[in-house]
Image (cartoon, rainbow, N blue to C red; front, side, top):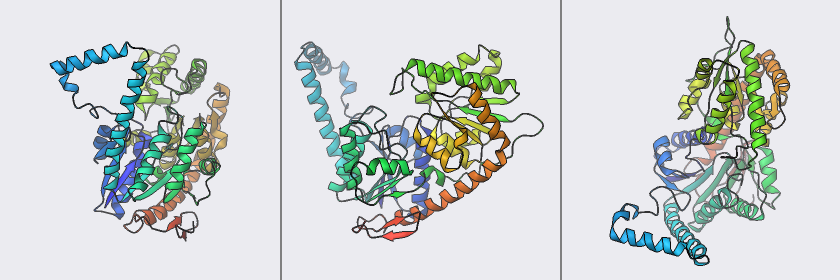
Length: 445
């Protein structure tokens, strides 16, 4: 059986990587002889990270559609370069040629992708914010999801959209792409009620389900759970984000970015003065790299550089290294959705500095809204209050996390038992509501 996994992954987001690791492990546990194929933004990274063959979900990535790149030194290469340089100087012709070139490249990519999808038994679209236009508008995630959904159904293969997040969706085109993708799918589940409501408000009348984020299916038994340190102050892990960074964030706001880092630096300074040990870590180098440098520069104004150097960890390269590092923390401060998920899995009391409703929803589901701060308005005082109540209630919070993780894992096991079997991956399979264990015929749903 050939199964495709599609996710906008490939540039170091370890939350995406964790989701795919959980899915791959659970598919192989249920369909041992399955051949799993990835579809991602960076096939080279996906092949290396997950050990599966992978293809691009866009019409360009290094090495794709550029087979003659090495021929630039030949006479033909030089002539082509001169012709392109000349055409670029013609004001009206140049944009038209560029549009035509992109169209031809996309048509080639569609043809290749169709034949790859046709070789599958099922395509699974899974991961965090797959149904959103936060990054690069409707022609990024929404279009990629739609075109592979359409290709899958044209190939008459099973299409599963599994435990995804949705939003923001603002442009009419993005809404149309997502609406038709969900309509085409054989099975659709969202990781939260708000995502389901957002997509269903587009006019969806079909049955959809709610199931936790797939990363809750990760096996973390090999990472030792330990109580808060005794005899000295505990270790606090801090996971910042490049929120509104004009160099990298979709919404560019230098003042909001600066205010966030100033407030975070003030909060870390207070923790240091209270005697806590600190470690700044990252699970997404591509989005966090500037924020890590700028936060470090701020902290060097109040602490010795040698101490600051010890506080900042190099970004982790894989999920195993990230979870190993986090298992040593006693408390976690994070601005990442999967930073909260990993804290729950490892039973680490967490303060979330949230930039998105998905983090608010996740904290609320475990009754932890009191320790979910707004990234645009929190300050040193509100952080101190949240952190102190977290420490006071650490044992209670760990118990809540334990129950939440166990419940989520049971729901995911039930869902995967139904979906990831040869029968479940057939196009005319029935559907399962993982919350009620109700089986519904696909046609009636």
